Amino acid sequence: MSESHAKGLSHRPLKRLLVAFVSLDSFGSVMVLILVTYALSVSVDAAWGQSLVLVLQIATVWLALRIAQARRGVVLGASIALAFAGVIAALNVVGVGETDLAAPVFLVSALLYFIAPISILRALISKSQVDQETVLGAIDAYLMVGMFFAYTYMALGAIHSPFFENGGQTTVAQALFFSFTTLTTTGYGNLVPAGNPGQSFAVLEMLIGQLFLVTAVAKVINAWRPARWKAEQPEDDAASEAPK
Image (cartoon, rainbow, N blue to C red; front, side, top):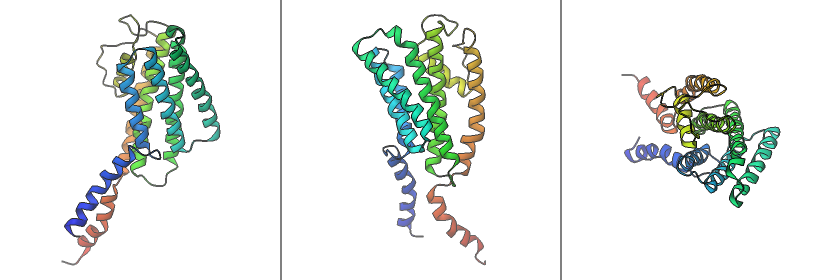
């Protein structure tokens, strides 16, 4: 294999990955939307910020369902939730009381992040081989599980305040931080649910996080072989089998 050809092969996986992050037909673009939603959620507390986050969530779930080719029933249920989210976002913009909409906003957000990862996992299971899209989809589903629990905690805090033992109003930044440290079982201990059902949801998130990592994500990444490796493998195998 020539040096120029080898360099070309080495750059192809990176190029495909970069393209995936901007393509509307790739789970890479879903990951970008999840990260943007996270950044906006922890940086803006105003009503218009919540509306923008809801719009991003609508776009994220719609795109995830489209790429995953979700079933009609799932799409119908998600469409109802998405329409409701759009109405809530509009009410926030026109100035309806933020407190009155807090619980519905967070419940809808949790529902959206519950529907999407299930559809993604269903699409990944049906794939005959593990490729870049499988890896990106598995990571997307894992991130969405963390987002689902975060907004579930926010909804619980809005219904039964306070959610954490330290008292006061629970912020989205706190809920996201607690959710992902719980999902990964990091557990810093600075935020602790005040009681049930928050404590039970936290235990459930720990179990799901560990099972998801050691089964879905770990197996997908272990089975993934980038195209460059596949292209080089036949030549390497031939070289190893050649008589010495």
